[in-house]
Amino acid sequence: MGNNMGLVFLIPAIGALGFFSLAAVWAWAINRRRERESLYHDETVRKISEAHGQQAVLDYMLEVERIRTRRLQSAYTVGGIIAACGGAGLFIFLWADRGYGYDKGYFVALIPLFIGLGLLAYTQLARKP
Image (cartoon, rainbow, N blue to C red):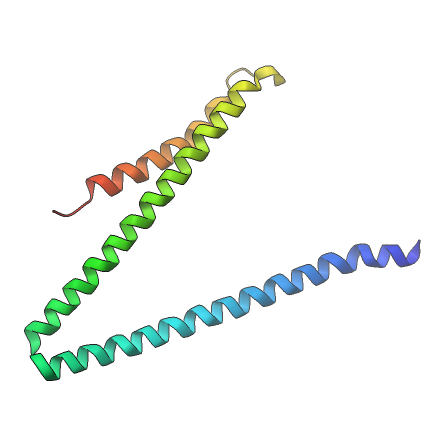
């Protein structure tokens, strides 16, 4: 019995150690990628400036910003769809299980539903022409 109690505490400790080690490596890799992207971006701007002048650099910077904005709006759209669908599904399941004593508990599911709909509305209304 004593040996089994040691395993009960050892397994979560090893799992936590593995998780935080993975998180540290993941954060390091993300920072390393961002540094590389910044270096490549700076080199590209320098080469465009030397070859084509300042107007080409401004055009390049505007296009990079447009691409970044489009990706961000796409991510907001996906997040809004996921939150709205999750809220709708939660609403359906909580509405079907009203026998736990409180009849209006399923309205809690409106929170993620409205957050998702708000994200979708933001991405549609904040688009630049």
